[in-house]
Length: 418
Image (cartoon, rainbow, N blue to C red):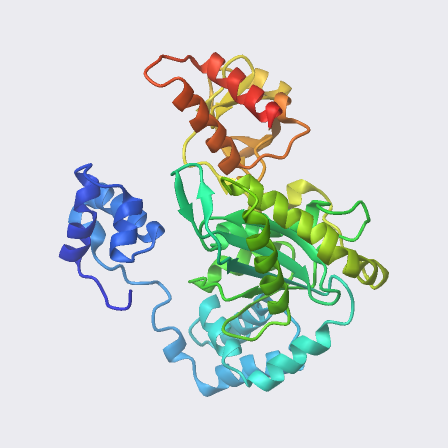
């Protein structure tokens, strides 16, 4: 969607949702407007009426225009001194320099654009020369597979995406996930967290935090969204588009393999695809590359604790009430001894849609700890898989009343049966 949309058109676009005639997802697909944008318009309208739909003036608007040659040259100089440093370092040094010169400040996005527009040969050479060992760089891809898979939440056959992280040096696969839409920043952060922590395909101690994280062909705007990643880990993050990848042959071979496998199924669904991809990665891909990965790790940097990576999780928009030291979330019951001190209080929740067995619990922005669904403690089930199971239960009880306790027990039973 390239053209600007004025106030009245914004209102007309979200009007069917406000009148409860259409869902935001449907409006998003019809108008080609991101769901997150529509959600922001609706929230702004509910707070301030049509005034909330007026285009706000950005606090950093035009700051890059006031950046003189001295400032631009300083940023370039910082980059060429060490092309492998992360942009956060360049940004912080540039702010300090401009402040000392009594010049106007600039945004992180401006520094990102300046660095990204530098000589591509120099940047590419710096990238290649930086990958000399395993875990120097992880690469992320979200690739559509040319097959149709049954989405059991909609009963439609859809084109799935495989979201995958490679180790650039060894070509071993660190982790993957399956989705029915191209990955956004939220999903990328979750998969990256999984890549750092989770031993998906081996018990060997070869996981950890890379020096650089390369994101291929994903549009992330504004780039300030990457700030937390670079600052908290810290690592260097780069977004590249429309570049040939040495991993393309992997996706071609995987797609051909899955097409053959899918013909054996009456209904090729999410779980069938997930199992097929995992088996392919384990048996046909990583067996060739694990030795190279394991034997060439240098300066292994591991996360000190899962708590260090909490900023990569998803925050629930609403609170939950604590009852009998337990809290209900996504129709699962989570327990923590610390919750006994917060009975009848509302707490906030942080969760991982790729694995719903536990959640982080907060009271007034203070982290209380982890609450666990004891029945799922040894299982890794995604929110998507959970919703499919819960939908099955609802269909089985069509036109019948079902209380929360029965619903929970049947959910756990179906999970265990699968």
